[in-house]
Length: 159
Image (tube, rainbow, N blue to C red; front, side):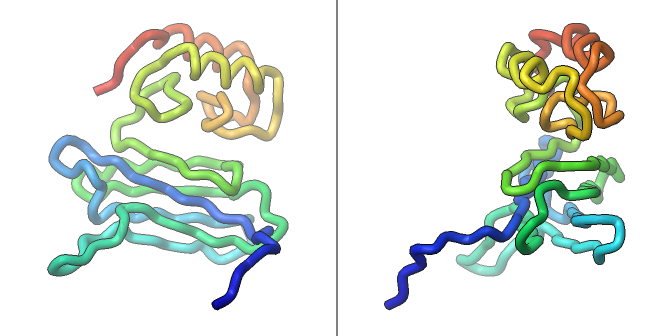
């Protein structure tokens, strides 16, 4: 038996797609990830398993050591054709991506709450950040525009 006491410094990203009511687990969703513009694009497709066996409906990407941010993550939902593209995504985390976007919902709980506002304020005035850190208009900055989007949707519950 072997035991790993050293840990692992490799970067990774897990993406959990959530489809509409008819495809909750996002079967057929294609998730693309590219660590940097010069690296190859990786693809994972969420598929159903066979009799008495199935994998978790999640895309797992490994990027090796030294990757702190993923340049591009693209999620394509097959039935609706909805495509979400995220840039500058922090590595070493698990993201839940919903087919229908919910403006202002940073933590993925389908509601715009104080937790989302807190995350936005922690990263306020930061540059080089992603949607998962409060950049709601994808300009890689958390600023007053992002705060306005958040406040316009505050206390909304998304379908």
